[in-house]
Length: 102
Image 1 (cartoon, one colour):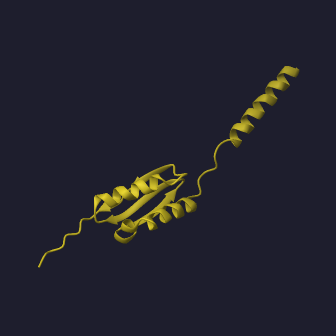
Image 2 (tube, helix red, strand yellow; image 1 turned 90 degrees about the vertical axis):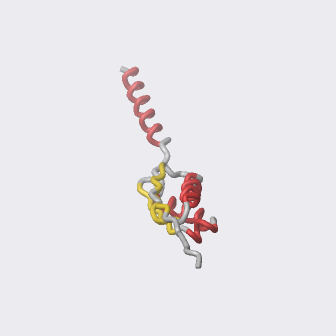
Image 3 (tube, rainbow, N blue to C red; image 1 turned 60 degrees about the vertical axis):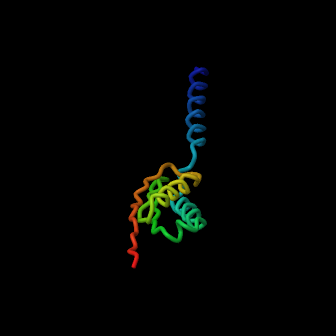
């Protein structure tokens, strides 16, 4: 009988402590703030890009337009560097700007 109680107590402790050791879900507003801060600190991306940032359950969603592929890649890299992100959906479109010479 004591062995049964001990086994039940051990199982309950295992469940309790494994639930406590899981990291809390990321705060989407905090992640968006961190990504925006990284973008603001990048002069070219901030000046040339029109990028919107959203987050859903820790997955960052990037939308908008930039004039060259390098800026889309830069947005991806800056986002990857933010801690706590569970994934990235980079839906930024590259729209090249052509200017005519007079």
